[in-house]
Length: 400
Image (tube, rainbow, N blue to C red; front, side, top):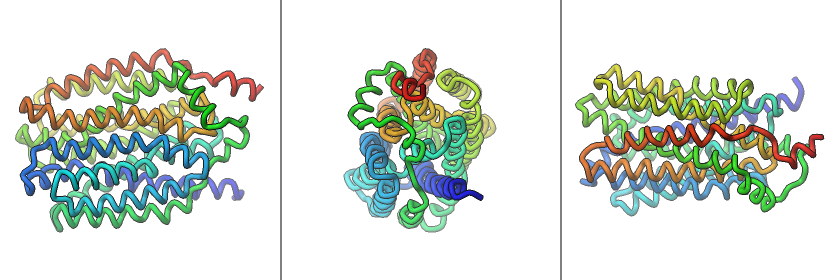
């Protein structure tokens, strides 16, 4: 086995395990909404705002985390993110007021996620993989994060039942601390050595003046709105509809399980077909699935069917979006550029998480937010369709 292949195998293992931990823990935060709100007599907007703040902090910090990883290498960025993530979970276990919840679950965990999630880690994979295998490699890494969402949910449920929400969060914090030693397995910026030199400022100017980049960013806003609203509020929505608590946890677990297949398939299809057109199809399919979920009679089995179908579409957008950015602009500043697009995703996440709680408290139901989600699906499908998946003139001239 060549040293290069062996290095890439360790890199993929490290990236996959880090995503497994960081996204697996985060996927279960919605399970803590009800027990924390009941203990402290909070309305749902308190927890929803903290989760929304988490996503906003994650998004704002992401371009800076990406720039640090591009400039100084990903290991330090990932390790720092792991420390903040673990600290945020442990502090969240002691949160007893809206302010302490917002600082721990919102700011600390949000900034920690910026160094331990897709934008930095998929950029590492994109920089290490050859261009013809880049989409598939990103799909495999994203699938590992998706499997964490499935595998860790039952553990979070058991922790809630065995030790309660506070001790459960502290234990999850100890588990998140494993990200720090795993960062030593990650090495970055291999393929970028073969690209023409470009400063971060030049990369920003080039990307922000590119129509396709702006359309990707606005489309990704919709992804964030939908997945965070569903991830945080779906368990409570199903309980409101008189379904057992375990159904909500099972639906989120099904989302995580089938997300494994969805992200892998999306990465594979991205090697064969236009990634922007695939994104349009995914967003349109999401709108159809949400509409069917609302208008068909609700039961345990329709809830499970929703989890399966939505899981196939859940994070399938990620390898396609990041792969398109790499095709357009190369991989030298991929983490930073992916971070900028991800900022729009997190603005959508903030609105999806917060509006879910706010509009529920105002109207007594989640119906209006579901309708907004359907309309946004149509908008995202229209935004991604005209994007041309073609390298910039700078890269074309360099390759020529």
